[in-house]
Amino acid sequence: MAIVGVLALQGSFNEHIAALRRLGVKGVEIKKPEQLQNVTSLIIPGGESTTMAKLAEYHNLFPALREFVKMGRPVWGTCAGLIFLADKAIGQKIGGQQLVGGLDCTVHRNFFGSQIQSFEAEVLAPELASKEGGPETFRGVFIRAPAILEAGPEVQVLADYPVPSNSLLSSDPSIENAKENVEEQSKVIVAVRQGNILATAFHPELTADTRWHSYFIKMANENEEEASSSIVPIEVD
Ligand code: GLN
Image (tube, rainbow, N blue to C red; front, side):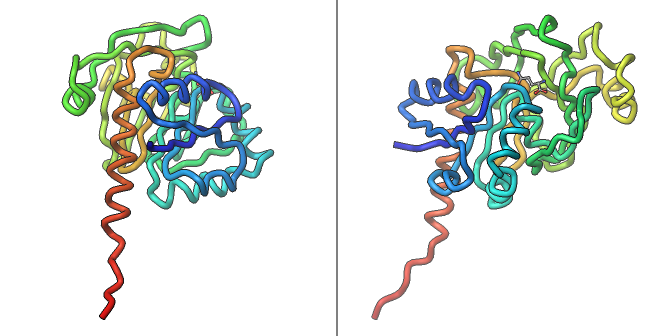
């Protein structure tokens, strides 16, 4: 049975472990740096990124998390997890919080607003349908959700979403640099893949639909296969 690590400092880690269990995959809680040695893939859940970052700092997890990403191990960040993985985060409440980075994106921490602006919507993700079967759309659960405003050339966009009319575009000065890009597109990115990094602004672990988890498990399994096939057997006379 495959094993997936789930960062278990704060947020919806239990829900991720439950979703993995429904697919017959064991999710193990990661709370300390040395525990990352026992897993070959990792989910960073949603929650509250500043709190999660403080706890990660307290447990000295940042160097090990960065190393894990750098090694090319499959990592999936949902919501606050997406913020963790971005190379750059903006938003009014960013106060020098550490990031893991690795994902060539600028993310806005609270692009879709505060708790009361949380929403659910059908979102199109053709890649999900082609890889996992079933419909091309999924139910996106957006809770104080971030959005990707700019993405580098290596980043594959899996889903985007229209900019809401009440968006922060006109009121948040930190968006200034990305504003033109967002206004031109009139949508923002909410799911991406860059090599072994998967990142989603919504919470699939809070729905009964396990296709995003299947997608990630497939990424993890493919990575395992590649790793084992690249081990050259020693020739014995
Ligand atoms: N916007 C939140 C943050 O900054 C993330 C919300 C979530 O993970 N549901 O951490």
